[in-house]
Image (tube, rainbow, N blue to C red; front, side, top):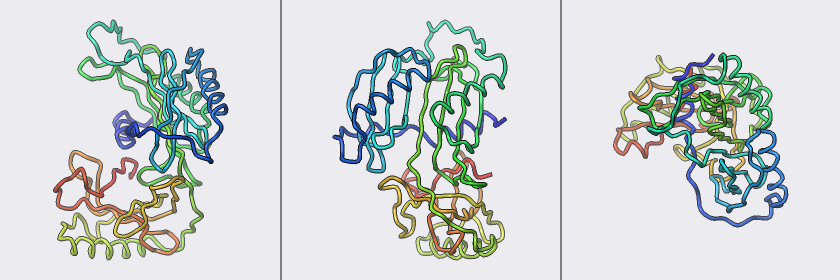
Length: 312
Protein backbone atom coordinates (compact mmCIF):
# COMPACT_ATOMS: atom_id res chain seq x y z
CA UNK A 1 0.00 0.00 0.00
CA UNK A 2 1.23 3.48 -0.86
CA UNK A 3 1.23 5.73 2.17
CA UNK A 4 -1.04 8.73 2.62
CA UNK A 5 1.98 11.03 2.48
CA UNK A 6 2.93 9.83 -1.00
CA UNK A 7 -0.65 10.04 -2.22
CA UNK A 8 -0.89 13.59 -0.88
CA UNK A 9 2.31 14.48 -2.72
CA UNK A 10 0.81 13.12 -5.93
CA UNK A 11 -2.34 15.16 -5.38
CA UNK A 12 -0.39 18.38 -4.92
CA UNK A 13 1.73 17.74 -7.98
CA UNK A 14 -1.39 17.42 -10.11
CA UNK A 15 -3.55 20.10 -8.56
CA UNK A 16 -6.70 21.03 -10.49
CA UNK A 17 -6.32 23.20 -13.56
CA UNK A 18 -7.68 26.70 -13.83
CA UNK A 19 -11.20 27.29 -15.07
CA UNK A 20 -10.06 28.56 -18.46
CA UNK A 21 -11.98 30.91 -20.74
CA UNK A 22 -15.24 30.54 -22.62
CA UNK A 23 -14.75 28.63 -25.87
CA UNK A 24 -16.62 27.60 -28.99
CA UNK A 25 -16.56 24.16 -30.69
CA UNK A 26 -13.96 23.42 -33.35
CA UNK A 27 -14.10 20.95 -36.28
CA UNK A 28 -12.25 18.16 -34.42
CA UNK A 29 -14.64 18.26 -31.45
CA UNK A 30 -17.12 15.44 -31.02
CA UNK A 31 -20.79 16.27 -31.75
CA UNK A 32 -22.45 17.69 -28.66
CA UNK A 33 -24.98 14.83 -28.69
CA UNK A 34 -22.10 12.37 -28.21
CA UNK A 35 -20.81 14.37 -25.26
CA UNK A 36 -24.29 14.45 -23.74
CA UNK A 37 -24.60 10.66 -24.02
CA UNK A 38 -21.19 10.32 -22.39
CA UNK A 39 -22.32 12.49 -19.48
CA UNK A 40 -25.43 10.35 -19.00
CA UNK A 41 -23.35 7.19 -19.14
CA UNK A 42 -20.98 8.52 -16.45
CA UNK A 43 -23.94 9.25 -14.15
CA UNK A 44 -25.28 5.71 -14.63
CA UNK A 45 -21.96 3.88 -14.39
CA UNK A 46 -20.88 5.71 -11.24
CA UNK A 47 -24.32 5.70 -9.57
CA UNK A 48 -24.20 9.45 -9.04
CA UNK A 49 -27.93 9.82 -8.55
CA UNK A 50 -28.00 12.45 -11.29
CA UNK A 51 -31.05 12.05 -13.52
CA UNK A 52 -30.40 15.13 -15.62
CA UNK A 53 -27.28 17.06 -16.58
CA UNK A 54 -27.78 20.71 -17.40
CA UNK A 55 -25.32 21.74 -20.15
CA UNK A 56 -23.51 24.78 -18.86
CA UNK A 57 -20.84 26.01 -21.24
CA UNK A 58 -17.64 25.10 -23.06
CA UNK A 59 -14.29 26.15 -21.57
CA UNK A 60 -10.77 26.27 -22.93
CA UNK A 61 -8.41 23.62 -21.53
CA UNK A 62 -4.58 23.62 -21.53
CA UNK A 63 -3.02 22.19 -24.67
CA UNK A 64 -5.38 23.96 -27.11
CA UNK A 65 -8.27 21.80 -25.93
CA UNK A 66 -11.83 22.38 -24.80
CA UNK A 67 -14.11 20.85 -22.19
CA UNK A 68 -17.90 20.77 -21.88
CA UNK A 69 -19.27 21.56 -18.42
CA UNK A 70 -22.45 20.01 -17.04
CA UNK A 71 -24.28 20.73 -13.81
CA UNK A 72 -26.19 18.02 -11.92
CA UNK A 73 -28.05 17.93 -8.64
CA UNK A 74 -24.89 17.23 -6.61
CA UNK A 75 -22.02 17.28 -9.08
CA UNK A 76 -20.19 19.41 -11.62
CA UNK A 77 -18.87 17.39 -14.57
CA UNK A 78 -16.35 18.34 -17.27
CA UNK A 79 -15.79 16.22 -20.39
CA UNK A 80 -12.98 16.70 -22.91
CA UNK A 81 -14.42 17.63 -26.29
CA UNK A 82 -12.29 15.60 -28.75
CA UNK A 83 -11.81 12.27 -26.96
CA UNK A 84 -14.84 12.41 -24.67
CA UNK A 85 -13.14 11.44 -21.40
CA UNK A 86 -13.97 12.78 -17.95
CA UNK A 87 -11.61 15.63 -17.10
CA UNK A 88 -13.13 16.31 -13.68
CA UNK A 89 -16.09 15.49 -11.47
CA UNK A 90 -16.59 17.32 -8.19
CA UNK A 91 -19.30 17.89 -5.65
CA UNK A 92 -21.01 21.24 -6.03
CA UNK A 93 -22.91 21.22 -2.72
CA UNK A 94 -19.75 21.74 -0.60
CA UNK A 95 -20.90 18.91 1.67
CA UNK A 96 -17.32 17.69 2.04
CA UNK A 97 -16.10 20.97 3.48
CA UNK A 98 -15.43 21.03 7.21
CA UNK A 99 -18.21 22.91 9.01
CA UNK A 100 -19.26 22.96 12.67
CA UNK A 101 -22.71 21.58 11.88
CA UNK A 102 -21.60 18.75 9.60
CA UNK A 103 -22.57 16.06 12.17
CA UNK A 104 -19.78 13.70 11.19
CA UNK A 105 -19.34 10.51 13.21
CA UNK A 106 -15.76 9.78 12.20
CA UNK A 107 -16.70 6.23 11.21
CA UNK A 108 -15.04 4.63 8.21
CA UNK A 109 -17.36 3.60 5.38
CA UNK A 110 -15.37 0.56 4.25
CA UNK A 111 -14.56 -2.34 6.55
CA UNK A 112 -10.97 -2.49 5.33
CA UNK A 113 -8.48 -0.82 3.04
CA UNK A 114 -8.82 -3.77 0.68
CA UNK A 115 -12.56 -3.10 0.32
CA UNK A 116 -11.85 0.57 -0.36
CA UNK A 117 -9.22 -0.28 -2.97
CA UNK A 118 -11.64 -2.66 -4.69
CA UNK A 119 -14.23 0.14 -4.97
CA UNK A 120 -11.67 2.64 -6.21
CA UNK A 121 -10.41 0.17 -8.81
CA UNK A 122 -14.01 -0.56 -9.88
CA UNK A 123 -14.67 3.15 -10.45
CA UNK A 124 -11.39 3.50 -12.35
CA UNK A 125 -12.28 0.57 -14.61
CA UNK A 126 -15.65 2.17 -15.42
CA UNK A 127 -13.76 5.28 -16.49
CA UNK A 128 -11.50 3.22 -18.76
CA UNK A 129 -8.30 3.38 -16.76
CA UNK A 130 -5.18 2.00 -18.42
CA UNK A 131 -4.93 -1.77 -17.73
CA UNK A 132 -1.25 -1.55 -16.75
CA UNK A 133 -1.61 1.55 -14.58
CA UNK A 134 0.16 1.82 -11.24
CA UNK A 135 -2.19 2.48 -8.31
CA UNK A 136 -1.22 4.62 -5.33
CA UNK A 137 -3.69 4.37 -2.43
CA UNK A 138 -4.12 6.34 0.77
CA UNK A 139 -6.62 7.08 3.52
CA UNK A 140 -7.07 10.31 5.47
CA UNK A 141 -9.39 10.30 8.51
CA UNK A 142 -11.67 13.18 9.45
CA UNK A 143 -9.84 16.14 10.93
CA UNK A 144 -11.88 19.23 11.88
CA UNK A 145 -8.77 21.41 11.61
CA UNK A 146 -8.59 20.84 7.83
CA UNK A 147 -10.67 22.40 5.08
CA UNK A 148 -12.01 19.05 3.83
CA UNK A 149 -13.28 15.96 5.61
CA UNK A 150 -11.49 12.64 5.30
CA UNK A 151 -11.30 10.49 2.20
CA UNK A 152 -10.15 7.27 0.60
CA UNK A 153 -7.97 8.18 -2.35
CA UNK A 154 -6.28 6.51 -5.27
CA UNK A 155 -4.18 7.80 -8.11
CA UNK A 156 -3.65 5.66 -11.19
CA UNK A 157 -0.49 6.45 -13.16
CA UNK A 158 -0.09 5.21 -16.71
CA UNK A 159 2.72 2.76 -17.38
CA UNK A 160 4.24 2.24 -20.83
CA UNK A 161 5.68 -1.24 -20.69
CA UNK A 162 7.97 -1.26 -17.65
CA UNK A 163 8.29 2.53 -17.52
CA UNK A 164 6.20 5.26 -15.98
CA UNK A 165 6.42 9.02 -16.38
CA UNK A 166 9.01 11.18 -14.64
CA UNK A 167 7.15 14.31 -13.68
CA UNK A 168 3.66 15.09 -14.94
CA UNK A 169 1.99 12.49 -17.12
CA UNK A 170 -1.32 10.70 -17.68
CA UNK A 171 -3.18 10.08 -14.43
CA UNK A 172 -6.57 9.40 -12.88
CA UNK A 173 -7.35 10.62 -9.34
CA UNK A 174 -10.37 9.42 -7.36
CA UNK A 175 -11.38 10.58 -3.86
CA UNK A 176 -14.23 8.99 -1.86
CA UNK A 177 -15.76 10.42 1.30
CA UNK A 178 -14.36 8.52 4.29
CA UNK A 179 -17.77 8.28 6.01
CA UNK A 180 -20.24 7.88 3.15
CA UNK A 181 -18.10 6.32 0.43
CA UNK A 182 -19.54 8.78 -2.09
CA UNK A 183 -17.38 10.30 -4.79
CA UNK A 184 -15.88 13.59 -3.69
CA UNK A 185 -13.66 14.29 -6.67
CA UNK A 186 -12.35 12.78 -9.88
CA UNK A 187 -9.72 14.37 -12.09
CA UNK A 188 -7.97 12.95 -15.10
CA UNK A 189 -5.38 13.73 -17.80
CA UNK A 190 -4.98 11.62 -20.93
CA UNK A 191 -3.44 14.05 -23.40
CA UNK A 192 -0.06 12.37 -23.95
CA UNK A 193 1.40 10.53 -26.93
CA UNK A 194 4.32 8.21 -26.16
CA UNK A 195 6.78 8.17 -29.07
CA UNK A 196 8.82 5.01 -29.74
CA UNK A 197 12.20 5.38 -28.06
CA UNK A 198 14.83 2.67 -27.63
CA UNK A 199 17.41 2.58 -24.84
CA UNK A 200 20.67 2.94 -26.73
CA UNK A 201 22.90 4.78 -24.30
CA UNK A 202 24.03 3.66 -20.85
CA UNK A 203 23.09 5.28 -17.58
CA UNK A 204 26.68 6.43 -17.07
CA UNK A 205 26.75 8.05 -20.51
CA UNK A 206 23.44 9.79 -19.76
CA UNK A 207 24.88 11.15 -16.50
CA UNK A 208 27.97 12.45 -18.32
CA UNK A 209 25.86 14.27 -20.91
CA UNK A 210 23.43 15.63 -18.33
CA UNK A 211 26.24 16.87 -16.10
CA UNK A 212 27.84 18.83 -18.94
CA UNK A 213 24.52 20.45 -19.83
CA UNK A 214 23.70 21.18 -16.18
CA UNK A 215 27.10 22.67 -15.36
CA UNK A 216 27.16 24.86 -18.47
CA UNK A 217 23.59 26.05 -17.90
CA UNK A 218 24.22 27.00 -14.26
CA UNK A 219 27.54 28.70 -14.96
CA UNK A 220 26.02 30.83 -17.73
CA UNK A 221 23.28 32.02 -15.37
CA UNK A 222 25.33 32.15 -12.18
CA UNK A 223 22.95 29.61 -10.66
CA UNK A 224 24.15 27.38 -7.82
CA UNK A 225 25.12 23.81 -8.61
CA UNK A 226 22.99 21.70 -6.28
CA UNK A 227 24.73 18.45 -7.13
CA UNK A 228 27.60 16.99 -9.13
CA UNK A 229 28.42 14.12 -11.48
CA UNK A 230 29.38 11.74 -8.69
CA UNK A 231 26.13 12.15 -6.74
CA UNK A 232 23.79 12.32 -9.75
CA UNK A 233 20.85 9.89 -9.73
CA UNK A 234 19.22 8.71 -12.96
CA UNK A 235 15.86 7.15 -13.65
CA UNK A 236 14.35 5.94 -16.91
CA UNK A 237 10.87 7.18 -17.67
CA UNK A 238 8.74 9.11 -20.13
CA UNK A 239 8.61 12.91 -20.21
CA UNK A 240 7.16 15.68 -22.34
CA UNK A 241 9.17 18.75 -23.28
CA UNK A 242 8.69 21.98 -21.34
CA UNK A 243 10.80 24.47 -23.29
CA UNK A 244 13.84 24.20 -21.00
CA UNK A 245 17.07 25.67 -22.38
CA UNK A 246 15.81 26.13 -25.92
CA UNK A 247 13.94 22.86 -26.27
CA UNK A 248 10.46 22.93 -27.76
CA UNK A 249 7.56 23.64 -25.43
CA UNK A 250 5.67 20.42 -26.01
CA UNK A 251 2.74 21.41 -23.81
CA UNK A 252 1.29 24.06 -26.08
CA UNK A 253 -0.93 21.61 -27.95
CA UNK A 254 -2.19 18.14 -27.08
CA UNK A 255 -1.36 15.38 -27.46
CA UNK A 256 1.84 16.12 -25.58
CA UNK A 257 4.63 14.10 -27.17
CA UNK A 258 6.60 12.11 -24.62
CA UNK A 259 9.82 10.18 -25.08
CA UNK A 260 11.73 7.73 -22.92
CA UNK A 261 14.47 9.67 -21.13
CA UNK A 262 17.05 9.38 -18.44
CA UNK A 263 15.89 11.89 -15.84
CA UNK A 264 19.17 12.80 -14.13
CA UNK A 265 18.72 14.48 -10.77
CA UNK A 266 21.34 16.76 -9.24
CA UNK A 267 21.15 17.36 -5.51
CA UNK A 268 18.32 16.80 -3.06
CA UNK A 269 14.79 18.09 -3.25
CA UNK A 270 14.30 21.67 -2.17
CA UNK A 271 13.26 21.81 1.48
CA UNK A 272 9.52 22.18 1.89
CA UNK A 273 8.79 21.16 -1.71
CA UNK A 274 9.23 18.30 -4.16
CA UNK A 275 11.36 20.29 -6.62
CA UNK A 276 14.88 19.44 -7.65
CA UNK A 277 17.31 20.22 -10.44
CA UNK A 278 17.25 17.68 -13.23
CA UNK A 279 18.33 17.25 -16.83
CA UNK A 280 16.40 14.78 -19.01
CA UNK A 281 18.21 13.32 -22.02
CA UNK A 282 16.75 11.00 -24.63
CA UNK A 283 17.46 7.35 -23.94
CA UNK A 284 18.20 6.68 -27.62
CA UNK A 285 20.32 9.62 -28.76
CA UNK A 286 21.42 11.36 -25.56
CA UNK A 287 20.04 14.68 -26.79
CA UNK A 288 18.60 17.14 -24.30
CA UNK A 289 14.85 16.57 -24.15
CA UNK A 290 13.75 18.63 -21.15
CA UNK A 291 14.83 19.64 -17.67
CA UNK A 292 14.52 22.11 -14.81
CA UNK A 293 16.83 24.21 -12.63
CA UNK A 294 15.63 25.87 -9.45
CA UNK A 295 18.17 28.68 -9.69
CA UNK A 296 18.78 31.30 -7.00
CA UNK A 297 15.30 31.02 -5.48
CA UNK A 298 14.39 34.54 -6.56
CA UNK A 299 10.78 34.42 -7.65
CA UNK A 300 10.56 30.73 -6.83
CA UNK A 301 6.99 30.40 -8.19
CA UNK A 302 8.41 31.31 -11.62
CA UNK A 303 11.20 28.75 -11.44
CA UNK A 304 11.53 26.21 -14.25
CA UNK A 305 11.87 23.46 -11.66
CA UNK A 306 9.23 20.74 -11.77
CA UNK A 307 7.81 18.54 -9.05
CA UNK A 308 8.61 14.85 -9.22
CA UNK A 309 7.05 13.07 -6.24
CA UNK A 310 7.33 9.68 -7.94
CA UNK A 311 11.13 9.90 -8.38
CA UNK A 312 12.15 7.20 -5.94
